[in-house]
Length: 286
Image 1: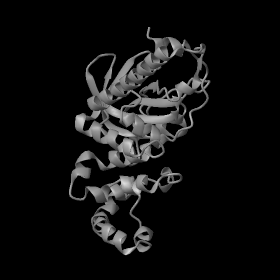
Image 2 (image 1 turned 90 degrees about the horizontal axis):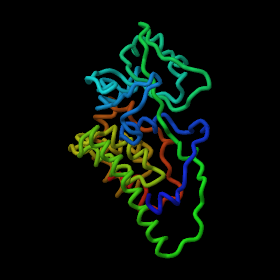
Image 3 (image 1 turned 120 degrees about the vertical axis):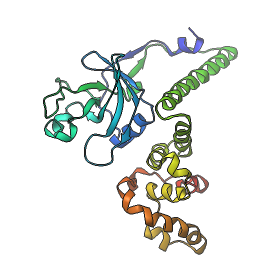
Image 4 (image 1 turned 30 degrees about the horizontal axis):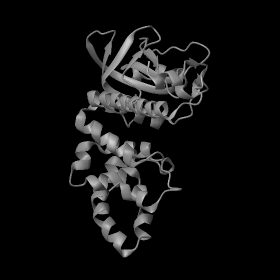
């Protein structure tokens, strides 16, 4: 055991409170591979997602044509539903909606005190698995290291940095296995451009635009438009320099926005307070 691991002490899990995170953020992080791609179902089976298929923006399951592997068996294709609570399958009417008959797995975040089940309208059982989100906040350190000398402190800092890098490397490896190296890098860079406050909006803009779309001749217009940054007010209130910059973006976006309007990010997802002008999302989206 490393010095850093010993200092972290034994971690004991206690009952965690309900997770406060938006469903759209959960889906973005899940799609990026941040929550892993292998889980244990409530029935005791292992399930692995090999590819997320396509993210459904219409009515119906959250992800369509997903490739699964259950209990190390053969690959199979079906749909995936992501809910905040295991009971949402019944609450949201999925059990009686034929559009959900192709769902093979329901991932949920919060666990109810009573058992919850998922079945389709044709009475087929849907496998359920929990996404472990926010567990770090539910952990209690049982050991606090005392004062250490300079040499030990430097050793611990180095081991902590290596520990953090290994976690990031593991997450990136999962993203590569799900989406390929180029798309995984595109998503990672996008999240990095958003820093802490806007990492998820930048990631969502990249995911909804797609690497091919962003690299195309109208890629910049797609990114700005899907981010919600192209509005009539933005153009009308701008100075001449800004208008000259926005004009070609508007021209391209005008031809695209009807077909992509349902994908535009909501305004309240962005955080603009306390940001330096050079780090403003409008600048970093370029």
